[in-house]
Amino acid sequence: MNYLITIYLSQYFQNNDKIVGNFIGDFVKPSNYSKYTYNVVDGMLHNSRVQSYMKSHPSFERSKGRLNPRYSKYSAEIVQLFYGHFLAANWNKNSQTDIESAVNNNYYIILESFDLVPYKLRRMLPVLISPKGISNIGTIGGLNSFIAELGKKGYIISNLQYTLQDLMAEYSGFQQDFEQFFADLNKFAFNTFSHKEEENTSEFVLAHAS
Image (cartoon, rainbow, N blue to C red; front, top):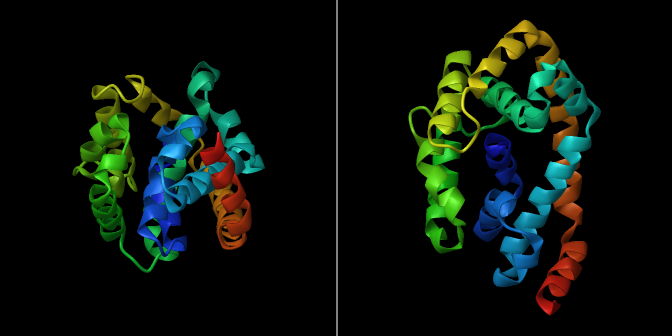
């Protein structure tokens, strides 16, 4: 559910195929990497590293602990939605491109390689860019509408918007967690995306040899 963070991180790529791979990475199993080109796989590998980094970050773990225990099964997805909210709310402080343009630019890049997009993500794209989509989750009302829309379409469990009560109860705590995580994420992304070319080439060759 870290779609907005994925879009934000696309600024580190100068290649559209890598942007596509980064965006669809959550929906493609490593065993299927051999079906894609090097640059698409490179984007997928970066997405995987970011996911691993996020889920092991102390701030992310702390945020999961702020949630009501009844949501423990979905805590990672919920926190990613909350972090998307904070990124959207502060987008202009972190990007020179406005949020709607960034979302639309990524959408058009994805459309140009639509044949590479897994079926489940194809179905979700209209929801992501709709008036109730990810460019509008910077407010609590916008986040609530987005979660409700995802639930209505069956992409997440229904009634997950009730977790917003947890967000509101510890808003400043979640925000502080996000800010600490996001500062570290930018450093991680810059260093990782800049220096993983050789390693990714090896992983690509192995994937195509299997």
